[in-house]
Amino acid sequence: MLLRLFLLLIGALATVLVAGPAKAQAEFCDRQIEDFGGPALANGISLHSLEWAPFGSTEWGWETYVPLMQQELGTGCAANSPVFARRLADFQTAHQLPSTGIFDPATFQIFRGLWQERRPFIMARVRDEPCPDPPPLYQLGYLVASEEHADRLTRLLRRDVLEAYRRMVAAARAEVPEVANDPELLQIFSGFRDPEADAARCAASGNCDGLRRAVCSPHRTGTAVDLYVGQVVGLGVDNTSPPSRLHMSRGATYRWLVRNAGRFGFVPYAFEPWHWEWVSPVGGYAGPPPPS
Image (cartoon, rainbow, N blue to C red; front, top):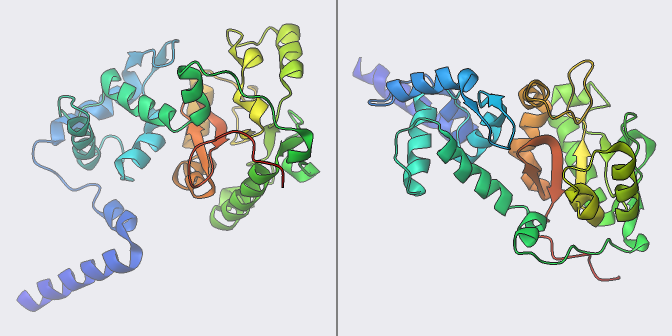
């Protein structure tokens, strides 16, 4: 009996060493942790029932944001698991919140702040810095037809961003069957947008997002991309309704991006599953690169 237990322990250790922490962690997501069964149950209930307005309009539940939270917490365990609750409690403690292990809007504001701080363009706007000029045309590269989503044609990205995007898509097609089998996935439906054209489109369509999009959009830098990650039938590729965004966040494409886009220098905007900004693998956006 003791020999069998010893061999089982050796096997478990080998799994950790060979498969890595993520796989080992996933194997133990259902384990019960003292004092976290109650928080896990509470999270499982509020996951679909919480009425709140994290971005201004009412939403029900917080499942849409779970992939980003799992990435932040370093766990692949479900939001209604004791392991997730324990990781959430540790996160709350680290950020001077009551360590209940129960999701609440105050905890989400910490997550949101961290995610926003990784978007240098947004932080520059918070500091009331002038809106950056768009890059000169010679620093922009053309997408090929297979990279453009038919719903919204775009043509340009900054060349270094375009190269990073292509590396990321190649990796996704190699690693995610869903992406490999659907050429639409990860196509770009909005890349570089000229500020004057953006303002004209805003005036024509009335879709100005409180004028911020027209006045100073991250798309003017040539470093922001809107990627096709799926859509609800009958709704647009950038429809912001809660059911639309929830559908996108459940897809394998979005979940892969959450886990891997940082390898290629891209960071997410939590409210829009399709919107990603390139900040480079070694630090934030510091304006257009100098002429070569």
